[in-house]
Structure formats: structure tokens, C-alpha cells
Length: 230
Length: 97
Image (cartoon, rainbow over all chains, first blue to last red; front, side):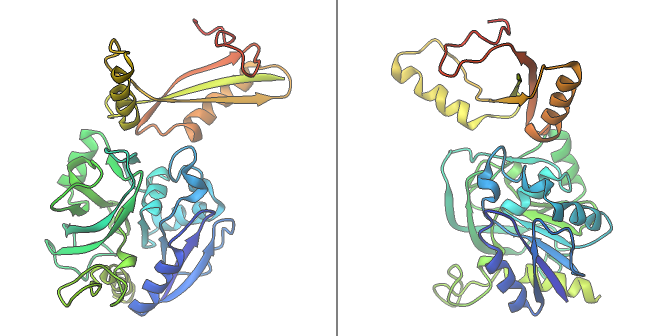
């Protein structure tokens, strides 16, 4: 299965996302922001970083990159798309997901290991989890405060479209502790924390087996492969 | 050469963390009379020739499509700047000042 990973000017985590795809058993395909061709990929990851330096608004300029026109069209046709951190911001700016991100409530960059609950284990990217499961993955952001109006938030909650929620501590002031959401079809998922940084023993957060043994993020990437073969 | 100014402000119902931080600093400098601060953005768009109605309409469209995000921000002004001297005190925009 071919999973595309997009690089925009200022993307940081494309290599990590590609590595996570390979560790899950997929083939990572590099996609370039200026190339509208999706190269026959079966799914797409928009990785984290600071595309265009977060100028204007995080994700606002990347959203109009040539590759995004193809991704928006394909996502509306059912292509699985995962946006992580800056990728989540780009999906919101592209209106593939509702709401928006503003500066963290405390105005500081936050970097920590974050506990999340997987509230929706039915999306293309979370089906290998169990609903309600607690996972720990790194979180690192500056504009991570998810906001939307109450009508939109009620709709997201009512339709079960909150995919992951902050547990223990809300690190950025996000409304209703929301860390990630999905579209109605469940093929487009965006989240602020970084599952691609918790996929390999020795490099992830602390886990049950000892320091840096946490690999709780890997199932985002195995989930999409299982979605594609089912 | 003409210029159009576009002002974008956070929606009142969206808590503005930057404005709140500025509001917290003002009393420490003796400016205790300001009860809240909203921090927005000002864009200046330059065109060759005069600012026509079509140019203003295009500026409004650009403001709504790219310069602002309607989920969190409002476009509060799209107007012509008559003259602009860098470093000059405010007052050259003629926008109710």
C-alpha cells in the first residue's frame, strides 16, 4: 500500500511520518507541495512542521499549494488523509475539517508526552485501537488551541467525530479537550499530537516496558493499511 | 500607485490569547484604564494605478479567501489609503481618525 507524505516549505516531520508508514508495513511515497500529481497513492499524510513559517495563519498558505487541490478532491472521494499538527491546521484551513487552531492559551510553545483517549476507533486511521483506549504520544505545538463555535462543537460530539481527547491536562486550551477530529465519512482525520514520534522502541515516550519504549502511535499507521485492504 | 488597507480582527467570541497577554501588561506600565485588548492584523495591498471599485472588490474577495479565516476572524475594513509615508504618524488613512 502506497502512503503519500507531503513536504511543504517548512515541513519538519515528513521523514518521521514516512518512517512510521514503513514501520507499519506500508510503502512511503514522497509528495511535493508544488506537484499536483498524487502518484497513485492509496492514502496521504500531511505531516507536522511550520510550513511557510506559520505566516498569516498556521496552514493558511499551504492550503492553496497545487498538491492540496488534488488532495481535497481525492479526500472528498474517500481517500484516507491524516493531518498531524501543522497538517491538522492545513486540513482546517482547507475546510476538510471544521474549526481552527489559534495560539496556545498560555502563549508558550508546549512540548511534552501527552496522554490521550481514543474516543472514536472507527475511522480509517484509528480502527486498530479500542474505543476508550488511553495512549501516550509526544505533543509539540505553538498554535494548538482548537476552537470552533458551540454549534460545531455540539455537532462533532453528537456525531462521535471527536477522535482523540486530551486526558489529565489540557495543554493548549483546546475547546472541550479536543485533540483530534474526523470528517463525517471518517476518512479524513486531524490531530495536534504526534503519533509518528511514538512508533519505535528506543525513540518514543516512556512506556510500560521502560523508558522510551512507547509505541502507542503506530496503530494510526497500521489502521490505514488495514482500512485499505478491507 | 494605489494602496488598499485590509483590517482583520479576531471574532469577539474567540478568546484572543495575544490580546489578553497585552491587556495583562498594560496595568504594569500604568495604563490601568484599558479593560481589554484585541490584537488584529493590518494588510496593505499595492496596485499599479488607481484603486478602482474593481480593485476594492478584488481586495475584499482576497480578504475573505486568504487574508482571514472566517472561523476565527472578521474582515472589519477594506479601504483606500490616499497617501502613505513610511514612518509618518498615523492619520494618513482618512478612515475616521
